[in-house]
Length: 265
Image (cartoon, rainbow, N blue to C red):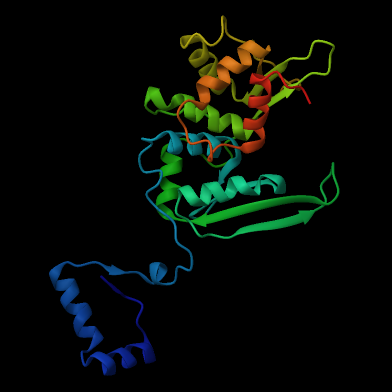
């Protein structure tokens, strides 16, 4: 495989070095049916495993698919995918890059928002036609917040998908009462909430489905909430399963460990 983007002086230099006309080489490549790299590939600065999401067949891939459902996005009219997180979660973007064998830069920003000044966040944006296409194929759509539908993946990997979604759009917290206890919640479309409800019920992690709650009247997105130290520990222990703990969002995992050990901070 050779590059097709040889022009001008570059072609002349290579012709002199190797003593072969580059146009002749391209002609023979075409005749033999061999592929040549496009200018687009030749000009790539950063690397990534373009085929990472081709098939969701490991706990880690299911986890990152769930996280992309929650906090990832597909950029319109481009081949780019991205994740933006609070600066405190930069390490999580580093884990994402590591899993995808990516060296795309994680950039940090600071700006004012309508509710907070000097908001700090970090972001990674990756250019890849294949990753872009595969994520759309698996359900990560543009402007997805109000239209998300459950993924079609192996049943044994659903727990890791839900965990990834939880790390993106879920919460774990304790109340401050005299008898403190932990709760977890998920925010999602009604169909996604029902999908999570049904999975937890099927695996005897809850006794009955949780009622869908709307934070605001007329809002499309709903929330489901599960409380109690025993129930939260049981659910989270199942979701974490056999996944590599270095991949999951550390601050939420630490809260789960606190819940398990009945530590209330």
